[in-house]
Length: 153
Image (cartoon, rainbow, N blue to C red; front, side, top):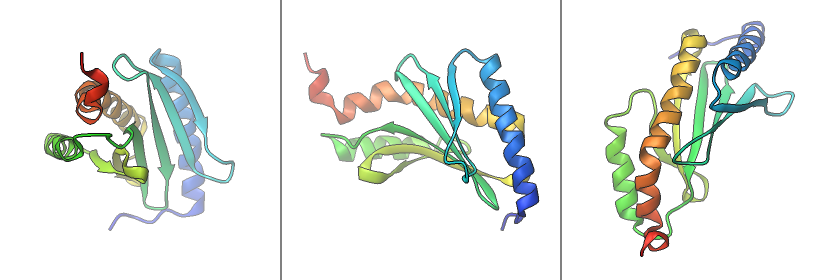
């Protein structure tokens, strides 16, 4: 089980994460926005402009033990659902630190989490980069599987 962080440590980490994410935005033109959730939440989002998918938004949620992160990849497939789900499950085998999952309304998400002791600017950069690159790499294929009739000639 991961270490339990108290409120003092969480507040410090909250300020550090905010600072690191703002710094990342200043250095990376792909990042178009960094913002917070509700004022009483330890939650952020990083919105990035993509080439294959117009925008990818990564949500970070700071808990007492882990930093969870996720991005919405695509809505529930209109067709070929079994083939799509098999495809993303097979992709999970080659991913490190993230995994595809089926979320609310059967949408496809990419998720992961880190123990709080591992959270630093380099890890945040790695997570954002991994989620962005994975979505950019897989999106054209899975959107054509799940919405094949929209791409028919």
